[in-house]
Image 1: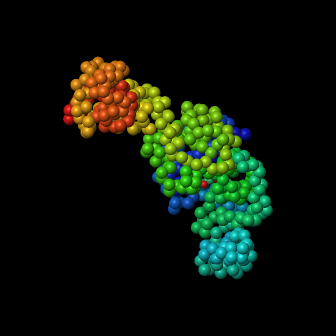
Image 2: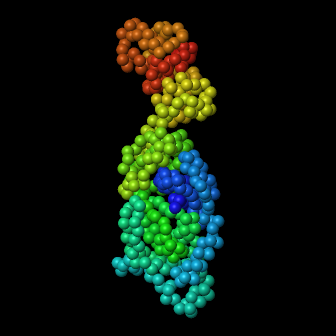
Image 3: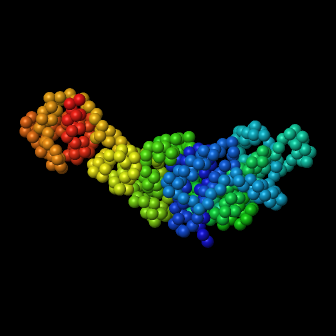
Length: 442
Ligand code: GLU
């Protein structure tokens, strides 16, 4: 049997690291077993779903290199949901309810006060024909619940092991709203059956949904799906991740010029029993993937770790690999420039601050003017090579008696405007004699 997994985001916001991790796990699970991966857009809630988020989700996945074999929107399947709903209804598994949200809330509060389970009391099942007529005459439209029949739902979760959920502690789920819109619990179950999904892997916030959905799936067909629930990632503070938290959206990392491989490396290892490290590419991530290494306790996202992985990746780039990106930033960036500067960059695009320093004449104010003037007098003629800096600073040292920081730092500041950066012996070769003279005399 071919493995078929799916990623089912609701297009109500930008994807964040936690969402993408679920996508990645499902994608890797399918890839690893030569299976199929489906992107399902959960857009039944048309008020909250936005087309711009759908495009963004697809763009994020493409940018990260997570491809899918098939995609569809739930909004295109309303007829199918209705059809399956009618089937369950004629099987006696669905019943109409007329309570308003306020009435339901009152019942819940009473149950809470009485210290009992806060579960829908199924009073709709006891309505007489006359009561139903009265509701209808009042203009009330029913919402529809699924009648749960199993007391305990058990399954062998591929990540959490044996699960045993008391379904009597859960309310009969609403499958259709009074306005005829199907709800996630139902549409997802119908799709998972119709698309022959073999493995549903999702966050452990869905564990009780699974208990309910298995019963719905069994009412539609025979359940052949294996479920796995992973712990959700948390923010470094330990808080839940939220779609409103734009700081950890894939879009924000792309805008910050973080490389896809840095994000994938983090997500492939965070919250697993393996250590976090930069991977050589997507192939390594696929080859190494093992579902069972995913931990059932939540991983925390440390943005500094992502930045450190990215810095490592930047250092790994050969000039040729990113030549077009570099020359787009500044056509003067050549291999020598890249090799000299890359050790100081956290992102490739940060090179632009160095093209500014090297190519543009930026006067640097020095409080050590006489010293710099003297250094200038001793500056060797070109051509310069890797020994020029030592020859030059030795001469300055001899003349002034300065050494260490006192000798070097004022020069670095005068030539670059910064107190840190690449090795001066390389950097001065990039800047060149004329620029240094020009810079100091202005
Ligand atoms: N749209 C649901 C969500 O984003 C999908 C959950 C699932 O994988 O079934 O939580």
